[in-house]
Amino acid sequence: MTTFSITPAAPRDLPQIQHMIRCLSAFHGDEAEVTLEQLQTFFFGDHAPTLAFVARDRREIVGYAGVQKMLQIHSGGIGFDIQHLYVAERSRAQGVGRALIAAVKAHAEEVGAKVVTIGTAPNNPTAHAAYRAMGLEEITDAGPRFRVFRDG
Image 1 (cartoon, rainbow, N blue to C red):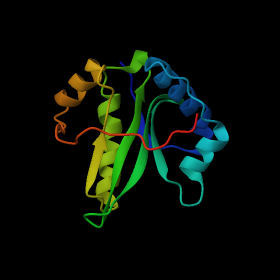
Image 2 (cartoon, rainbow, N blue to C red; image 1 turned 60 degrees about the vertical axis):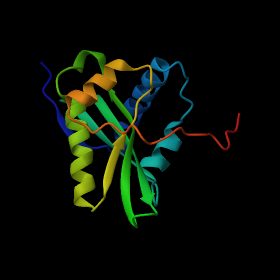
Image 3 (cartoon, rainbow, N blue to C red; image 1 turned 90 degrees about the vertical axis):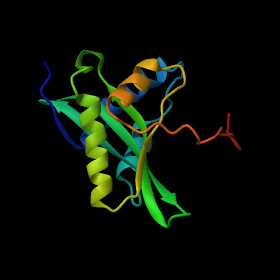
Image 4 (cartoon, rainbow, N blue to C red; image 1 turned 30 degrees about the vertical axis):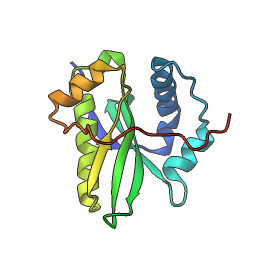
């Protein structure tokens, strides 16, 4: 069984986070293009739009959550969207994902956020079942989303 701790990510974690992003993208049939320099800016730059939490088993990162800050114009508040949640295969089903989500929720409460959301691909029943088992509220009326612009 994996023993782990959850902490905010540090710049030294970026190569392992980038590897996990590549693994998650490959799982979804995509190819990750993000560079270490971009991750540095996203997570640690001035006015960084995202933050990350990592799950460590001693010195090795076994999971991570990449979180996008959201402005909720209608409520005048902020929220967070967990855009990436990844747990290394050997550490799955041991509470790592649950602990990462709990860390994001605790941070959100600490800074006065009104909501935390997480999505998953429609063809990922394992994630759907895991989120339901965690007691997360399923959003069924969010409606379809449409892309306005995509370069490339």
